[in-house]
Length: 99
Image (cartoon, rainbow, N blue to C red):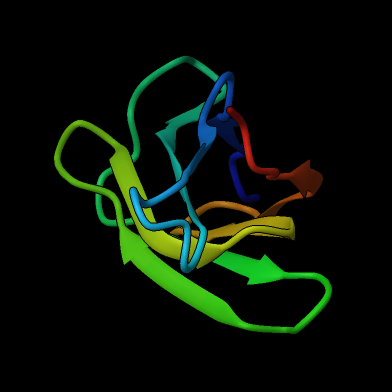
C-alpha cells in the first residue's frame, strides 16, 4: 500500500516581470508532505505547462521544499513522485503577470 503525498501550493506561484519587460517568467515553489504532515525529502516535483507541454523538475530538499524557476507564464500541472508514495497531480495552476 502506498501512502499519499500532499503538496502545499498556497501562494506558491508568482509572476515576475523583468525591468525591461522583454520576457516574463514565473516561479512555482512549495513543500511536499505526507498525510501525517511529515515532510518528504528527495521527491521529484515536475511542473508541466498545459499549453506548451514544457516541463521542468526539481527535487525536494531535506525539509521537503522545492523551487522551480524561470517558467513561462501560463497554465501548469504539478506532478510529484516519491518512492513509497502514490503519484500526486495538481492541475489548474494559472500564473499571470501582476503589476
